[in-house]
Amino acid sequence: MTIKRIKKKQPNANRGMELENYILQANARYKLRGIASIDKIATPVKVIKLATTGLKKGRIIDGYFEEKSTVDFIGIARGKTIAFDAKETENKHSFPLKNLKEHQFEVLRDKHIHAGISFLLIRFKAHHEIYILLFEDLEKFWKEAEKGGSKSIPYQFFKEKCISCQAGRNVPIDYLAALDKAMLVI
Image (cartoon, rainbow, N blue to C red; front, side, top):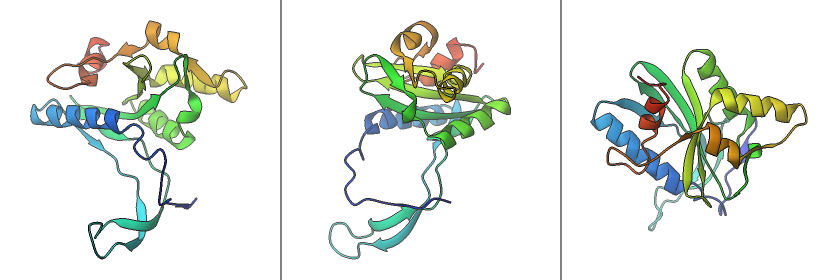
């Protein structure tokens, strides 16, 4: 087990928060309407020290990650397990595979093997577009990278082969509607 210290100042700490907030809004709406129950999975943290006074009282000021995290979101929709991780990239031309950790890939593979719907929800910030990259496609690129091939997925692949996510059902990103169009959650 690898232990990582939590840094007091994380320069990328809020990276992806807008995307995550959109997903949390969608998940709340899905739950409210009885469409799905999909939860954000927290990273297990061992707290060493909490602030005891002032405005930051109760906040973690020192700690470490106890174990590797899973993926960002896991749940169920219409009897199907859904597991996905949300990623953002500033890159205009491709999605770098280094943005996905090996243990996250393994979680997605495990859910896929057991007939779950596994994917990455990827936001290309420069293009203002969000795509669903299904595990089957991710796995092809991942294996190619392991063999020394390209370490990224071209943006054009997303445009041509992936599922585009749009706003709908009063949420900014209706990813379940996009999956429905691809006939994955019926």
